[in-house]
Length: 397
Image 1 (cartoon, rainbow, N blue to C red):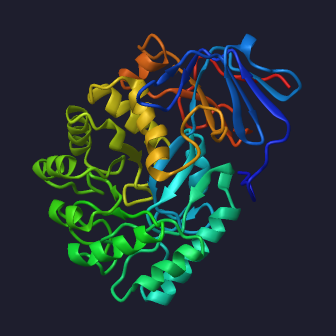
Image 2: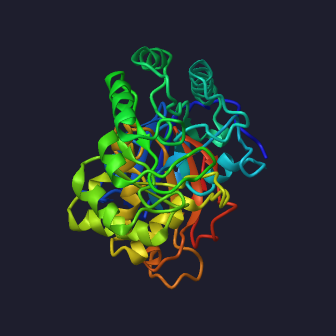
Image 3: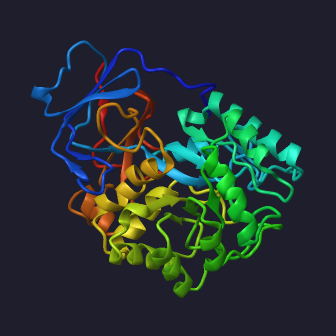
């Protein structure tokens, strides 16, 4: 397995034509009337009908052969350690494998699986800064992993957050995985983090690893973290009445994950729809975890929510792309000029009962991925993990 040692840069113009369906990543307009995308320097520069786009002098030209194009999927909740290795499951190459599930960006919820993870303030800051630096310069398979998410421990003071922010740390690990578990303690530290531009996520539900704790709805509301992490539990969910309380009681992001309670996931999703707050819903896997590594976890969540959550498939795709990008302040996740040229080209799986890609996903089938592109660079062709697609794109030049 070849692993990318660093972020490969796009050279020249990328042109993708003959796109059969284009998903925007936007809830308000999930489908685009376009069949062509042009990228330069790793960014989208044009999209629309082929006749209206400047497609000349392309260094890389791709014929989509009628496949659908979507923004690269974003996993809002992962637990990396170093490189493409997870001690949680003694597995190598897990991030590269997620690439073959259409994931182009990941966000760390804390590097908590590191054996002997430091819990003193000096050590936890050093680990966060190291993880941030490491994944900024090493991208397994080309996947962009935003890491360096310190777990809150007792004894941290405001200046610690200022130091972390100055060093480039922009995330907090799940509140509740360390010694800080009370709402009033977390609230003060979350506010310090927010003051210095560091985004916070809070653990929700029963304990997931030794040392973590039970975090109920009252604690989540009091702490007021930016992301309600795995609202459907990781793995053990809160009572559905408390999930309803969280959906109604605040306006923070509602994160639904693969490695959680599926009934709670569908319930939270339906609550968000009833409350007209779908813009708050983002998706993650919460992996690696005790239940393993799920390279197709985001695709499986999209299919679950579309098939059983009574939502159009294009809306479920938007939750895994544009919603996450907006709430996580990422430049990917939406197909529009100026955004990162991160794309997934896919089609209905062979022999699916669905009439087309969206209908097949609505029926619960996973799509077949034919190509994944990150920052304008083709990172993989036909996926080794998804079922084979009926149609696959072709690199012409």
